Each structure stands twice: as C-alpha cells, then as structure tokens.
Length: 92
Image (tube, rainbow, N blue to C red; front, side):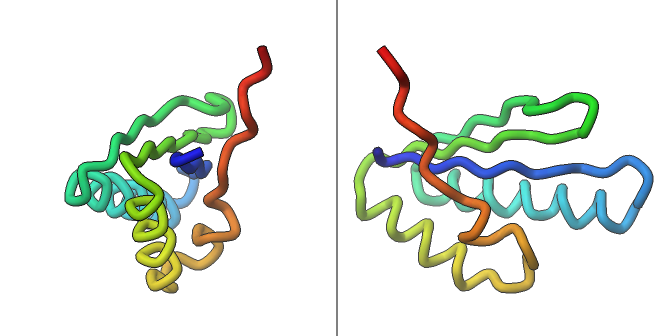
C-alpha cells in the first residue's frame, strides 16, 4: 500500500480560503513532481467542490518521506497527516 489519499475542499464563497486550498494542492503536486511520485486529482463531490488527491510511491521510503514532509508543513492547519491516509483496499 504505497499510496496515500487526501481530500481538499475549494470553497467558492471565500476568496482567502480558496487561495489557501489551491496553494496546498500546488504544494502537494509540486512535492510529488520533485520526488518522482505519481499524483492524480479526481472530483470527489462536485457540489461541495471537493477533490480527491491520490499519490502513488515507487517505494515505502518515498511514502515515508512524504509523511515526514507533510508533518513538517504545520501551516496547513487541518490538512496534514490527519487527513492524508491510505485508501481501503479494492474489493475483488
């Protein structure tokens, strides 16, 4: 399970919160690019402007590095390790 998922909400009615959320997404995708991590964004709930961000790592070490980096980014408020998690396994 060398991948992680988080959900980010991009509010339409609050310009400052919208900017903050898009900056978080930019940082996450920038870090993914810098560490050769695959990243994918999906619309989670169009009505809520929620986006699912999926990150796939080539190794457990890469995933651990992402966790450590995310934990060090305390200015994100609630979008930190509490919201980044391993998705459940697919059912066969």
